[in-house]
Picture 1 (cartoon, rainbow, N blue to C red):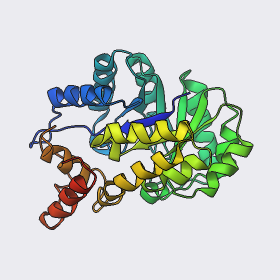
Picture 2 (picture 1 turned 135 degrees about the vertical axis):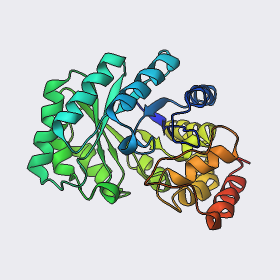
Picture 3 (picture 1 turned 90 degrees about the horizontal axis):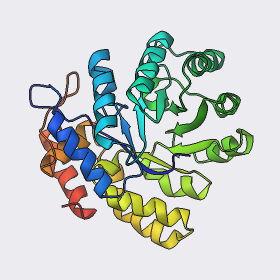
Picture 4 (picture 1 turned 45 degrees about the horizontal axis):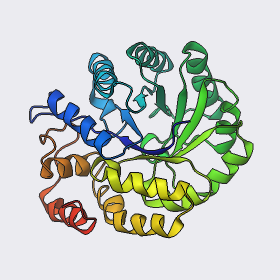
Length: 291
């Protein structure tokens, strides 16, 4: 089981949009030193939508090699084409990733049967642990709990990243899913109630800038130390909210640049954080003790 605080890692870029490989290596070391439980490469926060297939697979391979089995690596391999998702998932397996994270097919707006067959096809094709990823706010596609429960019976589908913020879904999925099925939060702001409801961890944007606190929060929750977990969640709440003042990963990439951890690059159609939001994000970093 992959549990705890997992970072939805950004893909650092130079000002011209090329991948900043040395900064990516530095970020990996930053997370391992600060207790991050797993690294998610090339997910939504990693700008998967603007990396071409060759870059996408190269980043996964680079992260796997630099992590060198010190923590698990989950590779973002979702696509709105089932054949492309299979190709990326096969590439992730070949690169040595520990698991794949597959976002629901965006833009197509498939029904529940289409979602079931999409994920079943990928799981049938690639013998690698796979996590479903439901984030309807970005994909215009909501995978309902019944579909998640149905897919949980496939031996290669081991968990879900649920980013709706709907805590009731945790109980519904937990009650119906196959034994050992992992339920991860994809919504930092509702993480504490998510964990209290029986969730197993988080794939976090906030962990990019505050990995130690996010790790400590998850450890406290696992130990049943809810007062400590609540204190940590409250301290991180400015980041949980203000890192989404513009579309992710615009604010978090700006924050990491401010922290001196990477260059400022981001790819069109995303642009750098608007000037009027600089103080908003900087203040959140200060309130949460990052700066």
